[in-house]
Image (cartoon, rainbow, N blue to C red; front, side, top):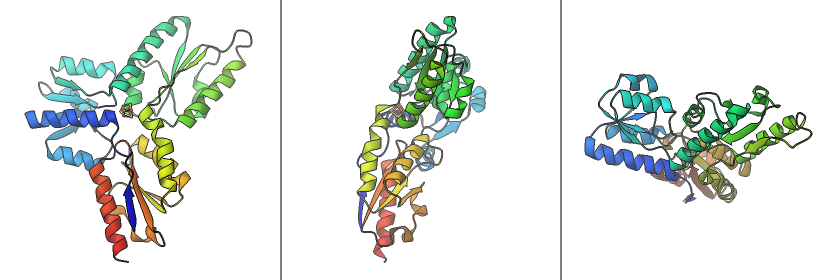
Length: 294
Ligand code: SF4
């Protein structure tokens, strides 16, 4: 069995940077709190927890004081900075610079369009930490939509600035923008539609789609390694399945099954932007073990 790991899979720049910052602090301090999981991958979290990282929720953060705390790549709403400041937490802000810029842009646009009755709409998962951080820039006023049928919450007679969570699917974003435009056209017949669509899907995500599809179609079987809570993993795995119906999703090497490779001569291992390289290597090793026995 020829087993290949996709060279383009694995941590994106923002997650890599946040983990490096956490590791540096762990070397120095021996203990570090992180607001939420630094990466949506249990295996990588366990590795970091073994080095002294402790993931806490927003409620637990309120009870901390005078300890080092890290904000992960997804970013946080302003209220988290207020808590860190009032509890004298020694804050390391590992918000991805791309997310940081998006937060600033949303705040600026919101401040500009709000007095004229404009709406900020964010295409994202309402419970996703990045989307919570983005919405926080508008004091919670932005309308979050995760599907076309949720667009009823948007007033089509008022101007709209449309943004996307950085990890969303570009095709779905296009669909949302198209449907919104159509709805607004019925209300603005004379002077054009006051809809501004901002291209805010991260290039690290958009660029991976064609690459992973090509990788998936060039192997008999694909094993995709990702965290069950990773939004990016779901999107990329969807592309693998479309390009190659013999695609399987695993969170670790123990889930790989030998029968998946019946009659196959090549297997490809790939993953999300939150999947560590070492985990993909373990999965590749497991495939070699299982197929060698046959
Ligand atoms: S996906 Fe892009 S925006 Fe999101 S953390 Fe990674 S590099 Fe940053």
